[in-house]
Structure formats: structure tokens, C-alpha cells
Image (cartoon, rainbow, N blue to C red):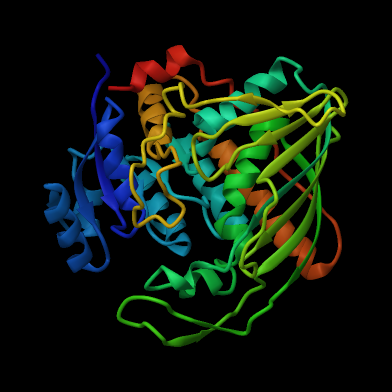
Length: 385
């Protein structure tokens, strides 16, 4: 029987819904209190989920709370994570780790000096889709991967988020900061650490219009680039071309394609947990499907459209598995997979990509990290209800 960790939630926005859903799947954490700088948001969250709301300060000082779940906006991730660690709490944050690389470095160093765990989303790479892809690569199904492509492209959050401005703000906004973590974390776990990056960027629309909520039809200024074209080189010599954009109405390209010296692979959506992996080893055009809907973290569990825009009845969403796996590792003194070294390396790639595009010169990636071990069925079952 696993220890059940008492979790305090800071930041009661849209994403909190999916973490509370984790109570249905995972056996070793329970969100018992919540806080938000807007206390009305915290009270609403507490009423909805039957927990206690309090101030951020009271939550950080509460001896009952063992892990802080940091779901604040990106620019607040550093401050909340730092205060959590300083108050002797383990912390698991939404992506990215921070909006500045130096802040990420400080958080990792602080966690080590305190002997505390620091974890970060995304945990989608622990799902059936990416893990099946990793397993097939480990089996040498497509050989040595040397080339590939990835794309995330859609119109932006302004149509479905009532407060979309941070996604278009300087330093914290843009598709590399927002969606880059899903793709980059998946690629690092598929291919190993990145070595260097080239990139260019553009801003297609100077203004955006809010589509829902109290500010519906209000116009706001776009402050940051909203499309990036990126060439990312890995230490294993793989070269991956990446498109990240808030300016595309629709497209029909695959999320990630990898090209090895023995075949090719289509990797499912790194923003979700399931989906089939497709491989081919000749020029017949006949792709082999490797389903994941029979895996614990690949089964379709979204039965209707939720407030998360990318969720539909064809998706698997097990957000919270990274928090659960971290809790298990805390109890058993193991290294967790959504760890600070991985998160800092991804943040390094993010900031280097933005700098490469801004300066129009390639950037070396300063950090490295270890590829996480394959998440075995036995390990997954240990944290499931």
C-alpha cells in the first residue's frame, strides 16, 4: 500500500480540472487544500471539489501539506516553486519550469540543497503513445533515428480562454513557451538530449480578439512572435525540423515523424497520452499500427468534450501521473522521471530556440540530461487504483 501524500494546490485555473481527475486513477496523492491570488477562484475550486481554500501563505506554511502542486501562470512558476522549496515542500509545477533559464537553474540547485523533489509537467510522455514509441525505438524497430519532423500549429487560445493575454506576452508567451514543452520533452525522451538549435520566427497578427468570458470581443496587442520554424540537433546526431505556431487555422501533418536507417515512425500527439504508433520498414506504403488503447495510460478515458480544448472522445488524458510517479519515488527514494534536470534541459532548449530566432544565429544547448527509463507496465500498475 502506497503512502498517500497530502497535496496543496496553488493556482485554481482551467488546468486544475484534469489534476483533480487524477484522484480517480492514482493511489498515492490527494489534493486537500487550494489557494489562489484571487481568493474567489480558490473558494470556487474548494466548493467544486470538496476541499479547503486558504491563502497562499497559509498553504505554504501548513505542516500537513507535503507537496505543492503549482498550477499558476508561467511567470509565477519560479516564485511559487521557490517559496515551496524554502518552506520544506516538494513541488510539482505545470510547464515550463520557469520563464527564465537562470530561474530554472536556481530552482534545481535549491531543491538539491534542501533534499527535496522538484517535478514538472508535461507528464504526457509517460502515456501509452510516447512510451510505445520509446519501446519500439529501443527494440530497433526503425533503426538509428537521424531525421524527423514535428508540428504544433493552431490559431491560438484566444477563442476559448477568457484571459489569453499571457500566451501572447513578451518573454512568457508564444508557442515555444506554451506548446514547446510537450514536443521537446517527448523528443528528448525519444532521442536523448539536444545539442544545438537554429530558428526563425514571425508574428502574423498584431492584434487578437478574445472569444469568450467577461472580456469577450475585447482586442489586445500581441507582444511576441507567434510562429517558429526550428532545426534542432541532438547529441545522437538526429536532426529534427519543428514548426510551432499560433497562426495556422488547420493542417493535416502528423504531430511527430521520425526517420531511421531501417524505417519510419509516426509518433502520436505528445500533448495527450494515447494514440497509435505507426511504423513502416519498406516503400510499400503499408504502415503497421501499434495500438495503445489496451495500455493503462493509453486507454481512452475522455467520453465527452471537456473545457480542455484538445480533449474529445478519442483522447486519453492521465495528467497527474507525473505527480503520482514523483510521490512514489519520494516514498521509495528513487529518481523520478519528470525531474528537474529534464525540465531545465527543456527550458534551455526553449530559451535557446527563442534566442536563436531573435539573433538569427545558432545556439548551443548548455545543459544535458538523462533519458528517462522506459515506464514499465509493472511500474505503472504500482501507482494505479
